[in-house]
Amino acid sequence: MIERPLTFVAKTLHIISSGWVLVLAGIIFVDVVGRALFNQPLLGTAEIVKNSVVAITFLQIPLAILIGAMLRTTIILDAVGPRVRKMIELAACLLGVAFFVALAVGSYEPLLEAWRIGEYEGEGAMRVATYPVRAIVLVMAMFSAGAFLWQISRILSGKSHTV
Image (cartoon, rainbow, N blue to C red; front, side, top):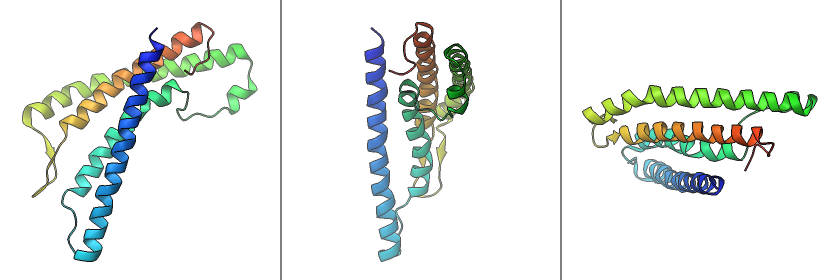
């Protein structure tokens, strides 16, 4: 019942982040061409790219968790039996939950402060607000913790750990 909406949201976020990558590629292209041909870079490119990379990464994490594509090695998993494999996968998911909950908790106050003071990055002609990216990090950390919890429920029910 929850698997389809969870996967749909994660895939939608992944598509949004992929589109964002294409927009970034266009911005970088315009910046490079402007520098090379007209000696005039696109103002704010560095700030936009710097903040976008963080947001894009966090938007892609939930789907990676749900499809079992988080970075891991299978050398040990391939060498152990199914019971030990299940224990290792559960431990990894519990660590994932703990990490993302800690990240969400640690991100909350800085997000509120950035929002309150109108925190920006960059100087001069182009200033980029940081609180939208901070909000993405917080929300995606909570979503990622939830994705790991979902994986735990799948492992405990004997289903595959991926959707």
